[in-house]
Image 1 (spheres, rainbow, N blue to C red):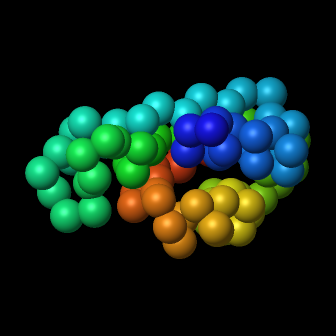
Image 2 (image 1 turned 30 degrees about the vertical axis):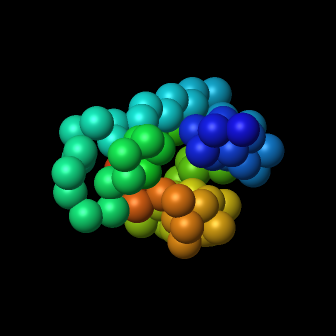
Length: 85
């Protein structure tokens, strides 16, 4: 299973989002530290979920980071999170 698929599954399970988009942007970082040859290390995430209503962006980011903690500690080098309100 790809890293993207693992993230999608975890976020769907945790938040049942109405919008979930994850893009592998590792190609933008080719040659940089933390960017392995196969990609799947740098991602952009856009998410909208009822669980985020009334919360600050930082609180939402913390929730996402908690759900993805294992991946962020390992194969994911960077994750840009956009919370859609």
